[in-house]
Length: 273
Image 1 (cartoon, rainbow, N blue to C red):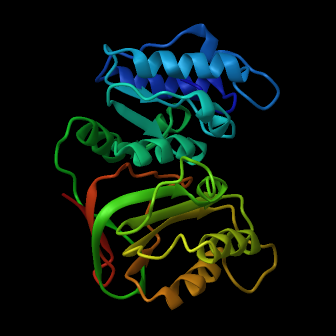
Image 2 (image 1 turned 120 degrees about the vertical axis):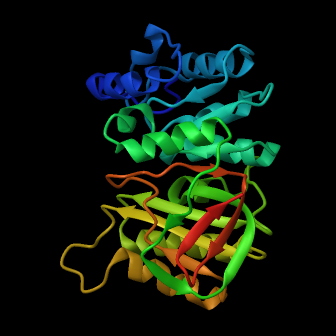
């Protein structure tokens, strides 16, 4: 399905080919519609999404692309029987709905990204879809020392911050929070993080997983986006590791949101039960 923006069809076809090696993909030609910066009108995208959620013959729902538009579908959305929701970036709005409902959902490559992923990432996605064990993910840096356990929640920082004050905001208390972003300059990352903090929504967060901050650098700055965000995180005094290959980078490792995890910030690993 395409709940957000229009997309490049050749990239979609490559991702579809990967998916078809293992599963039977189902879609309609409506998927390729466009309305301004959206993959069709709200009514068309909502009907497509709702039909997928209501169809008990479907085991998972994959996003074709991120972009923008998923949150416009939330007011009329009804979750049916549980199934895997798969995507990231703008799809974070739908992950919030799933987390609020107590579902698990997959923060994972969209179809237009899937065809560019290495074999081990694809195998990890298949394993998570099928309930198989997966290896711990490594990080590059320890930001805050210690070990944290809890359900993994979160996703894209920009979209997550836009859910504040809505009925679909999931409580982060007791969670290990995942954050990643793309194209947001450091001061914007600062503003979004500070919004979460001032709203009291970071209280009770047990640990923090920082993924890719892609295209977020300020031109000619003597600091990086990662340095800015990590400096903001440290005063919380919670375990935090940064530099996980999760998000908009060349490799987007799939993770199961809502699943219990163990973040060992000292060892720079994220393990899944």
